[in-house]
Length: 348
Image 1 (spheres, rainbow, N blue to C red):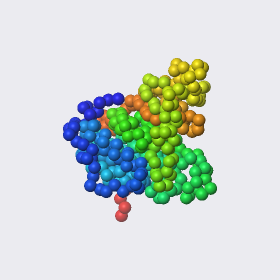
Image 2: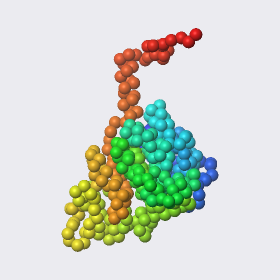
Image 3: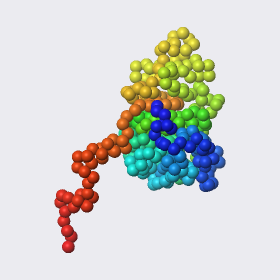
Image 4: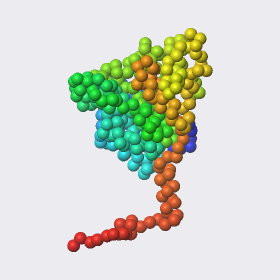
């Protein structure tokens, strides 16, 4: 990761505080919603990044999560359903010096916005994407979403959803994302650390956040977010460390062929040397993909942390280089001449 506070965005403002990033708008989410925590941690981490407020842009689509730009005292744009990645790409292409953040939900990003999402991942604009995943459509009052589990009973699936849900981490990895992570709305310290790591990454960073909708899908991720249960049901990814979890650090994850499995570290059959050692900087996506699929096996813990972080050229940099090359070869160009070039005709 690169120290972007000193090399990318000049005019650091170390005197800023969380309050400086709070807008004058009343925060209008349901009491107890996990969105409050994500907003608070984002506002807390921004002063540490050393960026002037006028160099930050928050862009969202449609959904409960997408109200967040209203609550940020920065530039922002509440766009249309699923199109936040498109607007964000345009902002970054026109003004590469800006720090651009996309706020989206599992419905906004992965349903109507699915095509825009995958192409943002593959193009690798230097944009940060926070996806609030609550496995439900909250704003429109409780329909199943692209991440709702199969058999989910909702207002739009009264006999249970027939769809196989999207796995956001797997989708981001398959689309070529260079930074992929997962965090929890109920773990503020971890969430702040992951958001900061995403900012420090040069390229598209994607964070899936397990977020509770206490009105329409309460407790969807409590097994993985609550103090009493998460220690036995989550494994925190740390680069260079074996995958160990459990209250007594007595369980590990090994790779059995092409499938991760839980093993005991106390019966003498397996030791730390047998476990998967996490490598978030691996160029090859295979291991990260294996880890992402662990959420689909009920006997496996959910991985939390950074799955992948690699450096690839950013789209906006490649675009600028291409434009400069074209100017050297052909000059500055003439828009009027371009519009009248080739096959033209006059309508009488």
